[in-house]
Length: 353
Image (cartoon, rainbow, N blue to C red; front, side):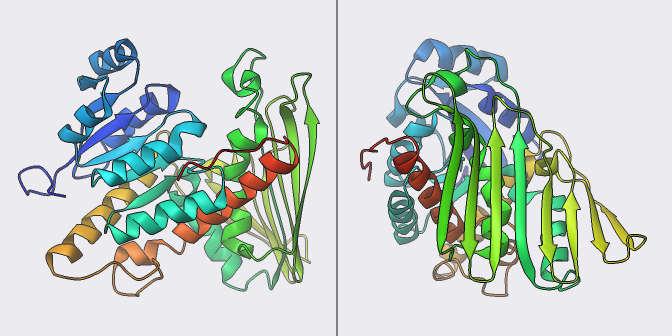
């Protein structure tokens, strides 16, 4: 893939014209080297309205979009993500896709494997994963200051109107598909994907969609709970418990700014603060842009990607993966999402390789 005039300016295309896509536009301006060029929606009228608002080219055909851009940002409905990712990769485009990247673990694994074979970047956009505050609380938890981690609890709830897409889409709506990725993020980053058991408990609306879900994980020597809701309000905090103390980020922890570390002595409290600028999408966009530039620099120098994206210790992209999302993290998130949909919602998902 060649960037615009070979000068390092990546022409970006947006797939989707909803709320997240509109938040993406001003945030993309904070990422050096990215110029948003075009937008695609299968309904050309919707693409036209979005394009007029943001000064873009409107596309009602995917092939037309791919001809105009070097990379794509996908912010379409959840169930369309995998198909759009595959199409973009087949056309040689780097991809930043909003969560959930896929709805089955095997599907996500295949997409990442295909991207790696093509020397293309595939990135899952969960803004919290890349913000400074979340990186800081992971650093604290991993430093050993609170001892061995034994329990992680994350809660994210918000109240949505009953006629919203999230509460009316009987196939792909509900609290866990909408918010679960956020709450699973600290669990996977701190405890990994080697859990022995996961159980889901949900409160469901009359249409069968979950308005409140608790996912409980059993790890060797540790437990974790991920709680999310769209129709029930709860204290939205992150707590990481260890053998020497515990760390907390209060609501809204997914926009992590202030953190505390508590010890046995209640008077012994350490406080930390990190910025969270704008809507937060700028952090994932910058990380994605850095990865793309790193990959293309290596390709020009005859170098390959870093194996299975393991840290090589020699570039800022690999260094950032300690706190951002790796492909292995995204595969684990998709696997848990698939388990939820199959066991709690009794939905058989079609394979979309």
